[in-house]
Each structure stands twice: as C-alpha cells, then as structure tokens.
Image 1 (tube, helix red, strand yellow):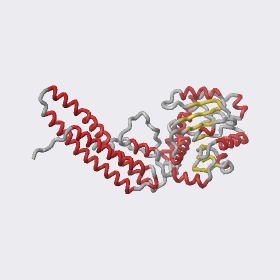
Image 2: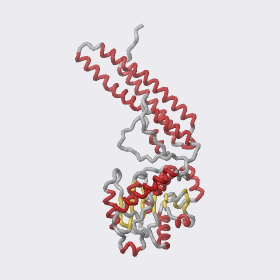
Image 3: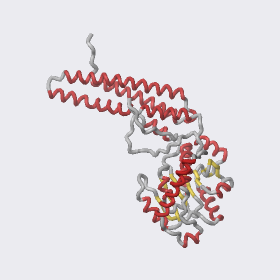
Image 4: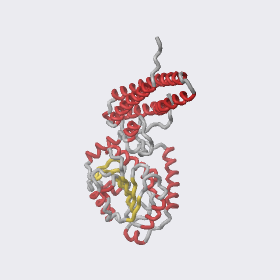
Length: 374
C-alpha cells in the first residue's frame, strides 16, 4: 500500500484546527482564573490536559509537515518549480514556527495556572506582617537614599503664601512605606475589578516623586499642590516619565472640585492646622465616589475614619462611603489576589496565551520570565 502524502492545504487546516482547540482551552482556563476562590480545579486540570495533548499532536504534525515538504521538493521537475514549491510552503512554515514559539511558553503558563489553583484557598494579607531584619535593613538604606534624592530634586523652600495657608512643606513619606500602601491599594482595585483605567491623585504632591512612583501601579497619576513653585519642579521631573503622561497642577485641597474623578486618593497630612485638615478630609470623602480608595498614612485619619463614613481596609487604606461590613468583604477578596503588579502592554502583539495572561494579571498573578523549551 502506498503511503499518502498530505497536501499543503490539508496540513494548514490541521494546524489551524490545533491552534483553535488550544485557544478554546486557554479561554476555559481564563474563565476559571477570573473566578478566583470559586475556581473549579477539576476543569482546570481537564483544560491543561487537553493542551498537553495538543502539544503532542503538534509535535507529530510537525514531522508530517516536514516529510510532506521534503516529498514535494523532491518531486520538483525544474529549478523554477522548486522555487515555486518552497514559496508555497513558506507560509505554512512560518505559521508552524510561530506556533512552536508560542507552545514553548506552555510550561510557564501551566505554572502560572497551578500557582493560582494553590492560592485560591489561601489568603495573603495586604500588608506583610513579617518583614525580615534583612529586608528592614535594606528598606532603611533605600529610604535614606530616596530622601536625599527627594531633597535634590526639589530644592524649593516653602513659600510665605503656603505657610500662611497652613500647608506643610514638601515632606515625603518613607518610600518603602509608600509602596506598601500603594501595593495594598492596587490589590484592592483588583478586588474591585476596575484596574483599567485607574486614576491616582496625590494631594499635596510637592516635587512629584510620589506621582511618578504611582504610575507603576495605576493608569493615570496626578498631583496637586498649593505652591506653584513645587508644581513647576514636579512638571520638570515628570517630563521624563515613560508611558502615560502624569499631570500636576496648582490647586487648594480645601476647595478642589475634582476628587470624584479619581479611584485612589493619597494624602499624607498636607495641612498643618488640625481643623483645616479635618475640613480637607471631609471634603475628599464627601466628593469621592463610593468605594474610592483612600490612602492616609497618619494617626488622625485612622481615628476619624468611622465618623467620616469610611471603612478601614487594612493598614492606612480605607474605602470612602463604604460600610465596614462591605469593606471587610472586599478586604478578604483582595487578600486572595496575587502580589504581582502588572501594567497592560498594549503594544505587545497578542498570541495564544494572551487571554490567560490578561485574566491572571487581573487577579494579581504573572508568569516567571524564564522560558522553558519543549
């Protein structure tokens, strides 16, 4: 019996069917990942097994494609015919090579899924309760360097107008503490399922370093300050930002009208006088939308959050116009998110795994960046 050599069209259809089968399983995995603690691990196992099977099918298909191409070239009756045959097979070759590159990433994707399966029954606190002595020492050195950098980048002194208004000069919160608060706020946003677009505001931004840092977590980052010279310095710094352009502007926190435009609002006691500070807090909460995340790392706000109709999430993170019961529910949901902070990469071409990566990023998980070959 003669062995039948499949033609180009048949092989291309088989490759496309294989890709569609994998894509359907990736979609199933993505849907399960988004369920978080309600993820069905049996469905996950089935989808992963199907992908494993398709990868084995791909290996066999590649052998058949290579054999068919060699047979077609061997049957060429002239150099011109050989060139034509190679040109006809080039598209299938490119498509199968792309598929190989994508399937080489499956081991990473499978580990990503398994990590989420394991994590779905555990909660990770929004603030790490056990910071090692080594990490604490490293943070202390980093904070000292950051404070020096902050002083160099904003040499402006407080203006007489700002002092008369009761504003504090540009005093920065320790960088390590700031990132703890923003990371917690980011995970709460993940739990709220509204990470993009997300808008951050620093009330009393000074020289703008915190605004620049916030761009790592949120789509847009803005800052306001009463002192125009601080704003000018911040604008020069933020001109170097990559990606979305941050904005800083002069405004009075006690009369600013735009608090409702933001998803996360940060304020580190920008006003000296207690009565004015309370007026600012009240204005922010009254104007903010329900569920707006407030980051207020000072004792006064923690003592007043109940009277301001704010729920306490954890640490110095709060929710505006939210009951404590609802806040506790959201905190528990946020504690089931992963620790990864991943900004969308709109410029990167999509591939077979894009839906799974997007779903995982929305849950706080990302792949290990070390590729594994099959």
